[in-house]
Length: 292
Image 1: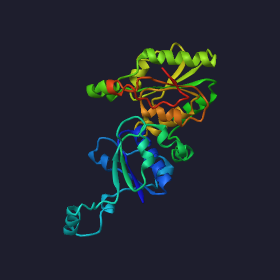
Image 2: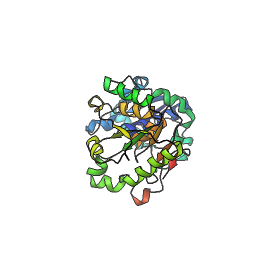
Image 3: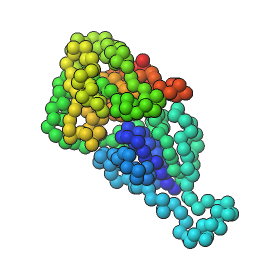
Image 4: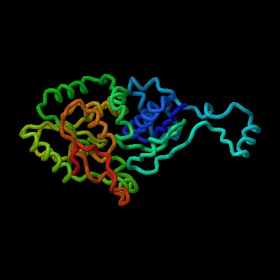
């Protein structure tokens, strides 16, 4: 028996797809494979192999899932209504948690985003072990680590821009969190922590915009903009996870930064995860997080 997880999108999406498939394989006692065929279009890079504990996961090859027989025999089998594939294909039916995942009893190929902790909460400790980070690549990274560790109130703030801003269709679907949201979230954490000296660690796919436009309210801050991290986004998630508190964008990237955090802090998440009207009910935030 095998579970094949289709991997696509950016790093945050890839992590959700891996975690969901891993949980299904664990429940079934099945072999676990990653289908990387989506990356053949060259739009994105497969990034999960940055995690040392994932590098050995089997890669799916379509030829493995067909009977070893000639084309004529395959044609006869199809006419008889017999599938020549050895697994069922399941596409995620909707963004909210799909309880049908618990009814899977045989080999399966999963495709979708699966952005909900419920899909893998039963093996959350294993997932955290799978997503153990490699060492930071440079002294600049280590300097930020030291600054986070020395802070009495470190706050990770993620602003997602990029295609959320530049692509009109993506903008209409996702939308961008407002500065009002970030200001309210920041004040909420400061009030709850009863501190006057928080230190802000700002993460974004548009750091230059952050340097000129993000309102830090006069608090000490650093915009994380490290050249060595440019093609290794997991380092930024790692830095996020080291912070005590978190203000998320409507993005799976900062979702994982908060979920993998080693600190027992406050997490603030946007209520509107999608701008699209039919999607506004969906939100992958955890019950312990503050949604505003």
